[in-house]
Every structure is written in structure tokens, then in C-alpha cells.
Length: 214
Length: 225
Image (tube, rainbow over all chains, first blue to last red; front, top):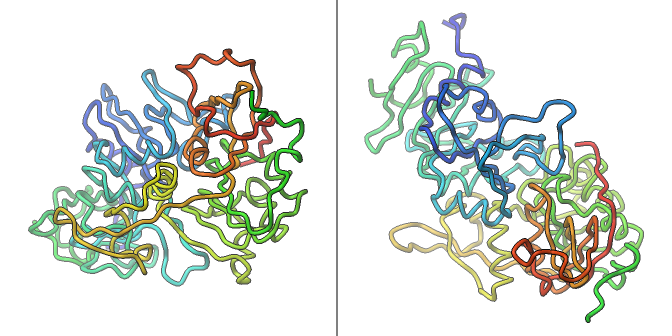
């Protein structure tokens, strides 16, 4: 089983992109979510939100067109799409916390079967952690989609019954897109909606430390 | 007309005492008042409390202040992976830190600016940032009490100012600057250009002059990201 093919980071991003409806206002987090803008299906326009005060963020800037006054949440130079707007950081988070965005796609270290999210600090790691906008975004956004690898590099499940990593936000995750599956978090537990090519429900359950309904 | 224009960066940071609480605008290097920070290094004020989204990137932003041991406490959302001077001082116990969710950092400054004494939020409930904070249930939701953050000074970076201190910003370099400008006793703006009164269309003013106390022209320093 370890030799079975899993989706690449780009394929996870492409799959998550299909969860976004046309015209949606969406925040993208660090890591895999940041790739999503490159994989929107044809004919779909999504207005990407950046916590530093941009709505309508376009692709990353090409060499030569970078302007360091125009950067995304990772501080990388980006471009704008027609209809974009600027605002200050407080209004940017008024949009996240106040439930004005349609969706946020975030990375995660762990997600619990209740939809609890851990994505700001690794236990025992050096340093103080990095909250940034994650807690505001997770707490307020209508639909939170997590993109991550199904297991850690050591093969440990990242979908668990109870978090062992420091909490970002309780009961906030709606959908988990991994390199093995798409899983919905509901009041009645986790529901396996889709499998990566070549994988069975039983195999994915074995790599998940919480019960999957399928 | 109240004179707000300062001839030099050093004059603009005059009088900042040891122990001051200072907000620093910017999101990484974008919109960061790097010239004012360098002037504060020259001035040498110590035991500062810094309020800033990040804690420096390599040699830029807040890094020189950590390098010279001028900051004792920092209130921040995201110290940053390349905040080496901060990391070194913090590991030695020379700098203490309060980590605050980014939007809550903004709202705590806005509360200070707006004369509000605090607010309840669901953000951070049951997490490490809730430790020591009052928790209650409002409208069926667990929430915690957050208190205002005020500062003695705000260092901000704007694009243009008029002679009164009405400010405009450039692209996403706006970020924390307009928020911090409203929450400090004395706001000091470094700007690319100063224009005569009336030259900025009132509809284009982002930070009204009432919030701005000192203005100094300095071409933005940009450090490699």
C-alpha cells in the first residue's frame, strides 16, 4: 500500500479548486492552498482575498513585473484581476471574521472528526508558532476547506479523533481534501465523498485515525 | 497651520523615550516604515514595546531594533520564519512576546482608537491565546474578552501626504498603517512625497490628517524579501 500513487500537491490543489463556485470570494492559506489559483476550471472566476487587504488577487507576478507593494499573504508579489480592490488589514479581517467570504482554503497539521483545526504550531518545535490570520479566518468563514496530505511524512494519520497539536479553531472545518480522498465533516461524523484513483475506502480508513462513514 | 512637516528622519523620532510603546505598520516589507526604524536605531531608545504584525525579515523591518537590543516586549501575530534577530533575543529570554490573532490585533487597536474598553470574540476560544482571558457565552457561542491595545507612537509608511498630514497609500502597502495611525497618541508617517494642501482629492484621503502628527519625506527602503 505505501507504494500506491497519491495525488501530488498540484493535484490536491486542482481538486480543491473544483469546490469553489463561480463568483466566490475566497481566502487561500499557506502551502497547498496557495497553488489553487493556478488550477481553477475554465470559465470560473473566483475573487481571491488576501489578509493584507486585497480582493481580486490574480496570478503571481512574473520576473520583471514584481512590485513589492503588491504582495500576497506569503509576501510574494502578485497581480490583480479586473474589479480588484484594496482596503486596510482591519477591513480584510472584518471580511474573514464577519462571515463575508464564501470560503477559505487552509493548510493543516491535523483535523479532528469534529472539524477542529490545528495549523499554527508544531508541538515541541523551536519557536513561538505562527498564528497570522488563521484563527480569524477559521472562526468566521462560512465554508472552511482544508487541503493537506492525508498522513505525515512519518505515515501518521492527520485526521484524528482528538487533536494532539495546538488548536487553531474548534469545529470550523467543513471539507478535507487530501492526496487520498475528499471527506466532509458533518454533525453525524466524517463522510468519505471521493477517493483518489486506485484507492479503496478501507485503505483510506486504515490511514485515518477517526471513523469514516462510507 | 499646525506644523507637522519634519526636515529629517532623526528630528521626526526626537523625544521618543525609553519604555515607549510603538506600533509599526507594514506587512513584511510592504508598507513598513524602514527609514523611521533606522532613525530609531540611531536614537537608541530602549526597553521598547513593539506592536507589529511581524518581527523582522532578515536584516529588514524590525530586525535592526532586535539586533541592537532595543525591544523588550512584542505584541505580534506572525513573528515570521526569517525573524532571526527576534528569534535569537527571544530564545535568550531578552524579549517577551504576546501572540495575537491578526484580525484581533487590528480590532484591539481599533477599540483603543474608538474609545471602546474591550470586546468579546469567538476567535481564539479554547486555544493558547485564550489563556487568562475572561470567557462567557453570548448568543449561544463561547467567546473571550479582548482588551484594547493603545500605543504612545505609531510609525507608519504612506505614499503621499499633504502639508496637513492627509495620507494616501499605494497598493497593498496600506495594510496595518491606517489602523495603527488611529490608535497611537503620536503618529509619525514617512511618506514618498508631500503635496500642497488641497492637492489630494478629499475623496482619495485614506487617513485623515487628524490622526497624523509628524510627517517626514523618505524614499522607501526595500530589503530583499
